[in-house]
Every structure is written in C-alpha cells, then in structure tokens.
Amino acid sequence: MKLATTAKLPKKTSAKVNDPDNPAWTEDMLGAPVLKRGRGPQATPTKVLTSVRLDADILEFFKAQGSGYQSRINAALRMEVERNLAARPRATTRKRVTA
Image (cartoon, rainbow, N blue to C red; front, top):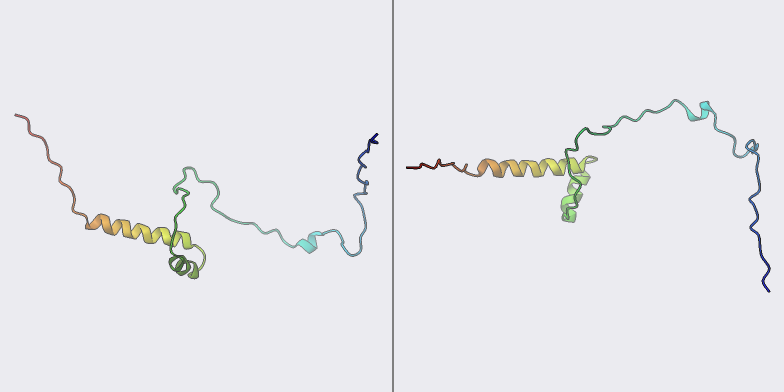
C-alpha cells in the first residue's frame, strides 16, 4: 500500500527583509536614467531577412571595420549590382508594325 504524499507549500517570506549584505537599490545607486535611442518600428520593412553563406575571410574583413558590418556588406553588394546594371547594354524595345 502506497501512502499519499503532499507537496509542501513554499515558505512565505516577508517582502521587507533586511539583508545588510544585499541592500535595496536606491535612486542614487542607480543614477540617472539612460534613454536608448533606436530606429523603432518601420512603417514598411525595407530589408528582407535571409541567410547567406560567406567565406570566413570576407566576413572577418567587414567585421574588423567595426559595428555595422551587415550594412557595409549590403552597400558593397549594391555597388556591384549597380556596376553590372550600368555596364549592361540597354535592350531596345521594338514596336511591332502591323500592316
């Protein structure tokens, strides 16, 4: 025959425990509030989340230049796309002449 066991309830502690080794934070200890400024939500996303496999040395080159390496990689790719578009001869559109 098994005896039923009951779970013990956790001990209730007072919210006002004085611990000299761990005093409560005060406004003076925390200092002035720091406001973080960021971009915030975009009205329409301009970039697409994707996964790209890059050579380790290429990624290290961009990361070594500091933060913002993803934007620099994007700018380098954009320059290459624009260079290729500028070098491509424009296709002439022909109008169909019907008799």
